[in-house]
Length: 458
Image (cartoon, rainbow, N blue to C red):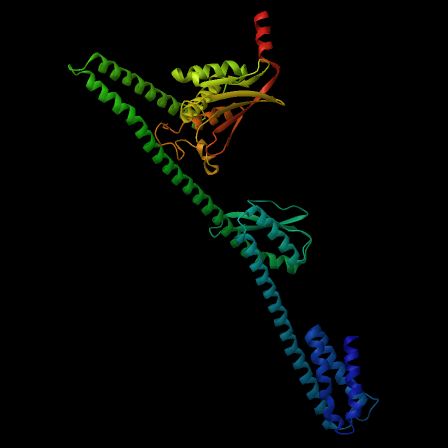
């Protein structure tokens, strides 16, 4: 119908032109129709239009009109020339059309490759990028579905699998599409899309490997920095009491010492030895926590007994700790030894910064938890330091001032033991107004005094 319509329009257009030009020269009017049909609908329809144009031109405009005959031999030449020109134009137009279609296809494939590259390379989440790229590929190729899956996948009666291989031939992923697709689409996927996609997936996987290696390298570098800092801190903290002990030991050997001086030096040796032993104990605790060797043995225990034992560990400073523990407190589920060490470190830290002022320990039940508070009257902790104080060997800005000295391990160990036992610890503080450490522990429904009474009765 398209061909017939175009020829009919051209035939009608010749009639008024016959008033100004010989009919035999007006065959060129059919050329635009032939060219249009060839460009838009292809070679075969263009050839048909050429032949139809020649027959129509002969029937309507070459004498004798109304018949498919030619009386003048010169008109045979004109008609033959028109047919040759029309056929040639149809062939040229079809070649141009084919190249235009191929160019459009190549452009679409290039746009698709660029889009896939953006999805797979720009997005650092490879799994998400593969899903997005699959959706984009299915939309661009007119597929009902498409999936890019890492590793080797097998096709079946409903799905066709295209291998995506790395440069060395190793299959790294699989493109899965419906089996019922056009042969031309299947060939495009096999010959052009799959190789491009394989290269992009390989780049994405290499990027992931490089990023993982960079993260591991950064972690190792940070670990080395931490180890260096720990060694420096430990060496300093160990050297100080050792130096004092060695110096006192040499001095004790002097025959000129008075009994009072000898007793003072002996007391210094004991004090520094206890300090050294405490530091070694903390290092061992920290080593067990970091090495995963501090698995708690959780049982129901009375918090009052734990707090009293932790307070006794302060020695001469035990009197600075004030207890406010109601008699009806529930038992807590914890490792008694680890919880005692944690509370002892908190009490030691609070006593150190309170400067002789009382340290208050309280407890209150909240739901299924018991909240234990340790409150000092020290200088407080700035907001920027409240999380860092739980890092091993970290010392706040007041740590080096006068009496405020310590190893920087106590709070790290306290948090480690408390969290290992299923509890949590937080800090509340205002500069200049003291600090409160709040420990939340899983609690039993019955009071510890009741539990102890039942135990004695049984």
